[in-house]
Length: 224
Image (cartoon, rainbow, N blue to C red; front, side, top):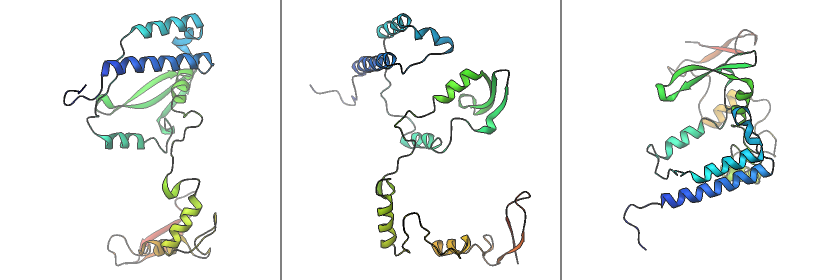
């Protein structure tokens, strides 16, 4: 039977199907001992309370949101991309840990991105933090193509050969050890780090090597 124009999915049927599959998976996880409840949900550890909770969830109408995102896939990619190389919370956001309470800074995106402060018990803070830890078997970043783990060395060797680059053994160094990072950068990019990035005329020279405890190891200045 043909659907009307613009019809995407039978949302009511999809809602019931999702409800059944989700609750079945939830019950399976509970019976296998994979679920643990704490704080206000601790009573659900008992089989009677958990069964009563599932019965209530089965009688409720579930709503499945099946609609194209307003901002498009690029916003989704930007959002997910912010979490690929970082943990759930950075150290600088932690303000205080005292008396079993954790106080930290968070950004309220619903209130004009204002920075606010929240205090949680240590148990609740750890529980929320562990929700961001990937389950066993999941990878935060998965490489494909010539960077795939299985054939990475073989494919990279072939790429270097096709690009006319110097051959290197797996785990070896592409460049002679007597060349510093500046020479390697110039070989790869064609631009010299010795040239002033602003005027493109003056040369950059080393005037002092300072201890690491003071600042960066090498200080440079414009000779012009």
